[in-house]
Amino acid sequence: MRATGLGQRLSIPTGEPQVIPDAYFEGFPNVQAYMEGAVADARERLHRDAVRRRRQIPELASRAAVRQAGERQAMNAGIQKRRPTSSSWPSCVLIASPRIAVARRV
Image (cartoon, rainbow, N blue to C red; front, top):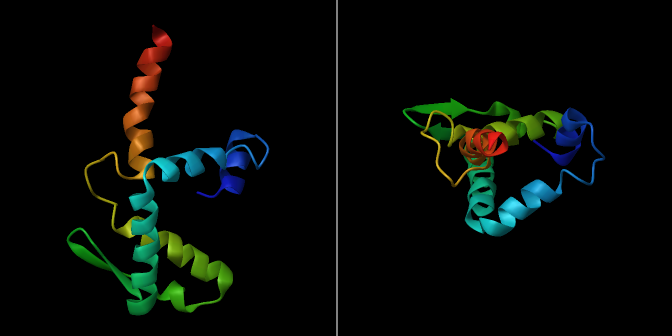
C-alpha cells in the first residue's frame, strides 16, 4: 500500500503515513531489495513463482496504471501463502497487532 492509500484509510495527511514504510525499510533494507528484485524478475519473465504455483502477470507488459497493479502482484506473489515471518511488511503487522492489543489492555 502506498502512502496515499494508507493516509486515506487512516484519514491522516499524506505525508504522515510515509514515515511508517520508510522506517521499516530503513531497518530491513534486504526486504526492499527483495521486493525490487521480485518486480524486476517478473517484468522479464511476466510471471512469478510463488509457493507451489506459478502466477502469470501479463499486466507487467501493459500501460502505467495496469502495470503498477502487476508490480504489486509481483511483490506479493512470493510472500503469499507463507507462514508470517518478521521479514515482510504485512507479516510484521500480523505479528505486532495482537501484541499491541495486549499491551494496550495493561
